[in-house]
Length: 348
Image (tube, rainbow, N blue to C red; front, side, top):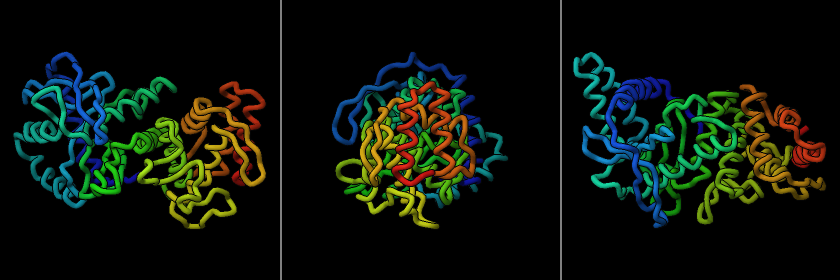
């Protein structure tokens, strides 16, 4: 979900600017290892830091520049109230200290290196996996390739089933506590949202119409490639299937494209093309020879960062994919696989 709240962005920008200065000038203990269990009960180890001002360990990975905070289940409306309150505080001579205290309290913390918040543990470790994937596969440092701090919030909203990037920070809802899992606990969802941020800093694809469907698909595809599962979700909650979009009632061919349809539905067409490109298969009578996950990921990333524009559609993705393969010195056989994958879903 790619949403922008202008007022909220300004608020977050203020916090980031002020608190980043504070963090960069604080004296942390040497980055150490923390432990905790994810929502499935698996023990995890991760980078943490020690904040002398609060004498607590915090979910801050100083190696990757990732900080995990809690939104305390605030709705959008409550966040806007915070913005209005912040606007009044700005004239207070103690404004910086007030904001510092507020942000410090929002960072997920523990009196010991063991963290009990299982959702925050999942978020912290999943974002590290996503960061490492982009860094190791593409050489990208953070979502903007400038090493910017990655701020993410868990416990967003009340029984919220969304994840989003608002231009400055990531936010993940906790689900409904029953069938819908916390979004930050799903690696593919974290990868999906991080890719929104990458696109925000590069192609700046629209989030409406066919460009919006392409936008959502590219995020789905990167999330699936990172998680090594061709689904967004898990066995209990299948949000979207890339290997068979029709499972969710989504189109898998341009002949089924829904005019003025939901971007999270129409994305199924391009999702199917990318699945075929990676894994191979026969679709609507067209046989595609797969080229594997790594080369598929490199084509997507190259197209996003080098060719795609704000209003690029499915049709505008076919040639950039082919051009990307040529730029990356793919074989003629691999380039034919790209052509076949897009032909198989009716994208010319």
